[in-house]
Length: 381
Ligand code: SF4
Image 1 (cartoon, rainbow, N blue to C red):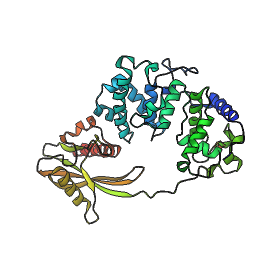
Image 2: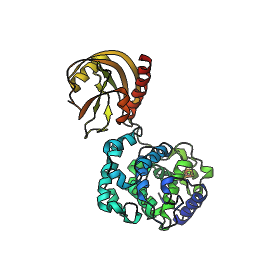
Image 3: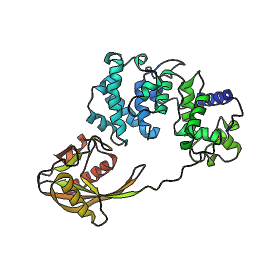
Image 4: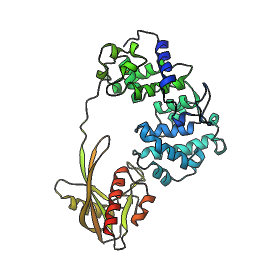
């Protein structure tokens, strides 16, 4: 991988393209007067930090309405740090990967101690050091680099999926990005100009999402076409090299919507230290190969809550995909028979009226169940 042209040429081509085609409307990249910041001007890192965490697993167009809603509820660090974790999770509901919301909340307490409650609106009182940001929960080098360059216009390189793809194509790397991280970081640092790092990093992200896309990149409108080895070799789609595909397992899960005689239903709260800890869900669990789904629901609810139920009609079934596995969820309406529910495998269990479900944060898969349940209850009335 040899650089056969001047880094300055690539920098000025990318910055030139950005000035005309960049996404200059992204709200967290604007200053307090809703204008693009001038070179060297510091802007509030708060909205940038929240957006960067939301963007870690999610696309910009999905993030945008969540970010706007978040900023209405938690307009600054003080309001967030003084808030309640349940409200934070409710605000995050639907975005997935809920540990991100919990880490933001944890980080808010650390940052407020560092900055001071009265000074959170002054960007210059926020930390500017990469290692300070990287010490916060859930913040890696790319997220920290993006926050620092966007907020303070400081030269911190980034290496998100877009940048990895552009660099792997630019230098026609024969290694997969995951096995080439060290070299890609060096290249990202090498390309980053001392002047205008904010715009340059944003330009790379915009170029990756608008031109150098995963499939069928628009090389004819790319500002670095003349320098791109993948393009010169006529094979941009062959880069980056791909990792071996992982086989994603599917698990079958039985879930019970358990009603008591008063028309209330049971929900339980996941343990704090588990995946999606603190979120609420309907009880249930994994089907064993030797049992029917009805038997699974009966057994799981007895094991998890210590109660006996009667499994009734099926409400719905659907498949929900995570990055590492797929869940096939089968949901039945159930009737409570005996026993007082105890949180044997959760941190809390509650009987609630169906109308109260909106006060609790549920993972995305459970939100689908709630929508179907609302329709079911409307027909039942
Ligand atoms: S020329 Fe094509 S492959 Fe190369 S960086 Fe530009 S869009 Fe990507």
